[in-house]
Image 1 (cartoon, helix red, strand yellow):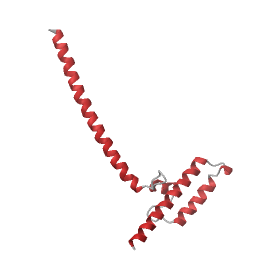
Image 2 (cartoon, rainbow, N blue to C red):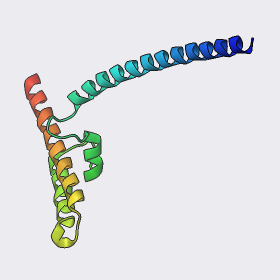
Image 3 (cartoon, rainbow, N blue to C red):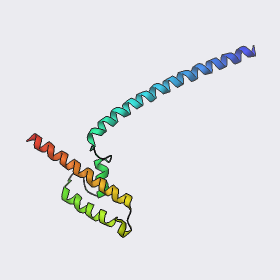
Image 4 (cartoon, helix red, strand yellow):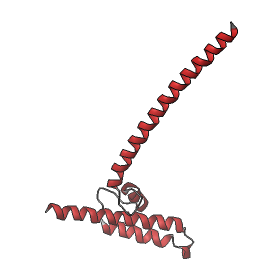
Length: 120
């Protein structure tokens, strides 16, 4: 009698675990698909050459994304690049972040300029 009860508990537990596992797999597959679709959408909003977002680039250079101008960004870039030079005891890592931020902003401004020309 006890053996029968024990076997029934094991089979019931295995069935519950199997259902939970398949449901978790379905959810993970759906999440992966959604994440890939979202990543593809984000890729179109990013510059092709850099992996830094425009918002992050603006934060690094301390410029406003709404009133983005090349002159203001260039001034911040020159200052931050100079301050973080190795000769002045700066960090190459920070200097490269500043460089990539400026590169991203230049790409964005070029893209906006092309769109404006295309609309005219």
